[in-house]
Every structure is written in structure tokens, then in C-alpha cells.
Length: 281
Length: 114
Image 1 (cartoon, each protein chain N blue to C red):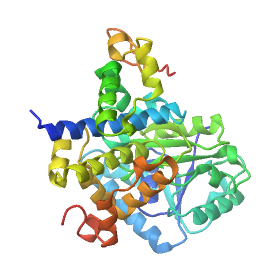
Image 2 (image 1 turned 180 degrees about the vertical axis):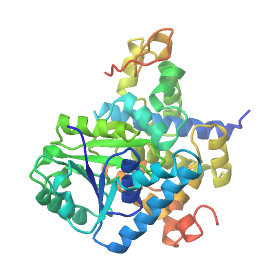
Image 3 (image 1 turned 60 degrees about the vertical axis):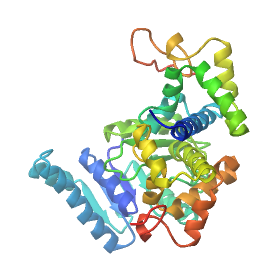
């Protein structure tokens, strides 16, 4: 099956970026949110993204305008009746996502696929509230989705091979790099990244080497684009702690969040967004 | 020349990355090729963990893990799939086969998994 027209549900930063990526690849998109002001903000964000491409000489003004026209903004379900795929990108809350999935299952054509952009919640739990669990999968973009190339296609217990193939083709059409992963906490990237981060935190605690020295050593060795402490501050220490706790609960103590991280979050130091984390900003 | 603590840090970072990647493979969650792609495109690593190990030589990686398990803790115990490959003489790029398969005289990897 080919995705001729898709819907993105939830017009926050992630949802807006995904709509932009699809429109930029020439695929008609319906971008839906329950709040008009969120849609307006998304529209301005998408306008800026296209303008940037024009400024950098990648596309002409006419092309930008034509691609912008691929996106329809709506607060209603009416426009969803002929899409072949809906990508859910609402907040990371299982009950909220389940209610979105139930609603989509009612309003989408019976053969359409439903994908979730979740980075943390189990796909099989979302699939189970629909009458089409074989047509449900994860389609996990990375932040910022208009730049990052990777998409993790997450296969739930009942996800069919055809669903996976359709999503793989779509990812390629979007000029992204798809990988396949079975439904499990952290999928690939967050799980491996957090395992390495936990090890570096343990190293720091044991040796007392400063955060800055460790970050510089990692950058100097050219093994990762930035050191783990800079990265954690950028992600948000509260988010990092939550992911570490979830992974520790599933996979064991090797993910156990380090004391430094717990202390900082307890003190309200959440990284760049609060002005203080492993570093002061 | 990196200092001792730096070498130890990099060793623990890269081997912890590799061990978690191997768990994904041993648990049947993702193929080595996909894990490598994901870690490069999604986390910006310079090299995927399986290619890193295959290029270094799985026998070398096995030895490093045994040392680290003794020095730092049992969480660095070498995984079963690594021991099996070393026993079979599948040492990585050098022998044409490790976690992935390599076509001789070409850096292209085949699509064949395990």
C-alpha cells in the first residue's frame, strides 16, 4: 500500500515538523489539533521552516508556496475520512494516546494505518484499543524531526508485515532512514544511549573527574557528537531521569540513575531550560 | 596521547554501548545492521557499535571485556554471542564475518543478518 494522503494528530513541535517533512516530500497532509491556537503556532513554524529553505537557496518561493499548500489545518475529524495513514503525535501520556487511537479507529477508513510517534509507550497497548491491531505500529521521529534522519519503525505484537513495508516505503519517500525494532522499552537509540550515559555517570561518581573534562574527552575521542552531560542538560534532566528509571525498572540496575542526576532534579536543576543542570547557563 | 583516566572512560563508554547493542540483538529486538544505522543517524555516533567491534576484532573486544569485568564489575561480562563467534573464528572484518558479513576487497556489507 502507498500512503497518498496522511494525517498528523497533534500540532505541537513534533507534529508540526512531521507535517512539514511530509509536505516537503509532496505528500498531502491533514494536520489536526483540538486547539486552534496550537494549529496557528504550527502554521507559523512551518512557514518559517519553508522560508529558511528558500533563503538557503534550496527551493524557490513558488515551490515553498506549493508545498505549503499540501497542508490542511483542522480541529475537526471530517478531513480524516480519506487518509491512508494517521501519525499520532500528542503528549506522552498513555490514557490520552489511547483515547486518540480509539477515536481514530472510528473515523479512519477501515484499511488505513495508525502509527504513533511515541518514544516511550508500548505500541501493543495502543493497538489493543483499536479493531485493527495489525495496522498499528510505531513511527518514531527524532527531535528536531525536520533535520534528524532516523525513524524507528516499531513492530507491536500484532503489527503485520505489510504495515511495516508501507511505513518503510513512506520513510524513504520522506528521505529518512528507517530501522525496524520490536516493541520494547527505549527501542534502539534511547536504550543504547542511556546505557552508555549510566556508565559514564558511574565513572564520574567513582573518579570525581569533572563533567567538563569528561565531555571534552568524549568529544576529543570523536565517538559521539557531544559529551553525555551537555546532552543530558539539553534533553532536560527530569526527562533523562524518567527515561533512566523506566529502563531500570525493565532491564535492571545497569540503568539505575546515578545520585548526581537524582540530586540535581530534586533541587529543581533541570538543565538548559531551568538555567542550571550539570552546568550553569 | 590520552591520559589513563581518559582511556578508561572511553573504554567503558564504548563497551557499555556495545554490550547494550548486543542485548538488543540477542533478545531478537533488532538486527545488527539496524542498530548501527540507528546509532549513527539517531544518536550521531561516529560508528555503529557492531561495526566498531567487527573492525576492532571480536577476539580483542572479548579480551577487553574480560579485563573490565574483573576490574570494574560483572556487568561487563562478555555476552554469549561474542564468545560463540570468537570460538568459531568469526572475528569480524578481518575474517569476513563477525556480527555482520563483509565482502572481501569491498567495504560494502551484505544485507545478510544472522
